[in-house]
Length: 477
Image 1 (tube, rainbow, N blue to C red):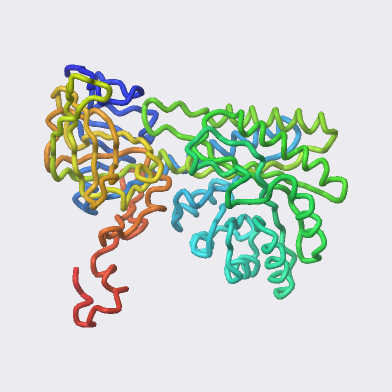
Image 2 (tube, one colour):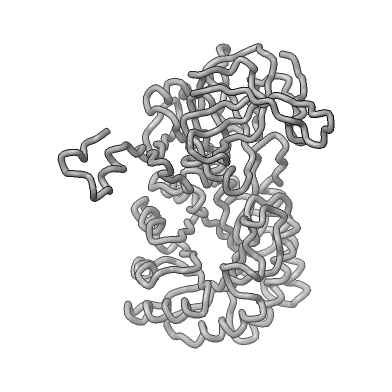
């Protein structure tokens, strides 16, 4: 296989020595290719899954999810035990939530964070102990708050002044005492996409630091509320611990002031730990993050002369993201001559558009954030020269791109089966019915077997909600 760089490729993308090879950094731990080049995940062949369930298809490696949950809990537990306290780990359900996944992470000792009544319903239906559920959201409805209090959720994260009264009212009506956290903005900006950073002062989440003390006084004035501590989330897809360290230092300084008027048993530093989507990504190992954050918490508490709190975290993507792979079928191939930038000569280079049977309806992240992904042909091997491709979706938007840039064998053709790794987080969760396309099914694979987690939508499902369809036509497929 000849390696020739295409000048249209981004600087971070290298020409692979073998465009069939799977990088362990971005594929599930069980992903293997046999001598024919056929991919298996969890011991199940990708072409067999495509034949049984169709494409697009989300695949989730169950053992990958479970092992990442165990690894994450062990890392934070051991590091915070080392400094003399303990850690709590909640799975951030917004990354991907189904009843099965809720059971998996609960089995492995994690709590679950939810952000809506629907996510709460799924977690409870999955058998998660309500006491191990945290309820988030910047605009929880009165009904959602009441349902959470009635269910006995362990914590509700207060995001605005009006929520203090709403949660207190629900607790009073139900005769309960509800534990709450106060979400604050530490002012730390994680180095990530602006839309993914959630600790700016000028954004919809939480309280500015300077207003937190007054909010805590209000919480403490209600007999039906118990103040657990502060909560902060500095962003998503974060590499390195510096942002967490600075945020923790600022929150602990505030915590020292709050301790003057009452207990503050916990501190929640949120989540946002990054994963590899391409070979250029270099996420910080979770054990290293846990050790660094534990050290800064210990040092700051010692400096402030305060007791070490229980420290909570909310990872989602780092647990489920790398476990997911999306399968697509190639439909059309189109070569486009593109004029090179800053070339007065008008020199061009070829970009190959490979269109698949999914797109922004099953993975909105490239359109939303310009997110990069990797791709491979997974039903055969090829010794053709590597060619730069852009994998496009089938939707009527020019921004409907699945993979902006990667190298595939140059003989990629209609009918090939493609797989995009690292799609376990925020793909199904953000899926839509744009162009009236049904959302794909989700299957779990483990020990050579596959089972359906979430049924794919059919045209019948989509038409069933359209009240203009005559009853005798509702059986359309």
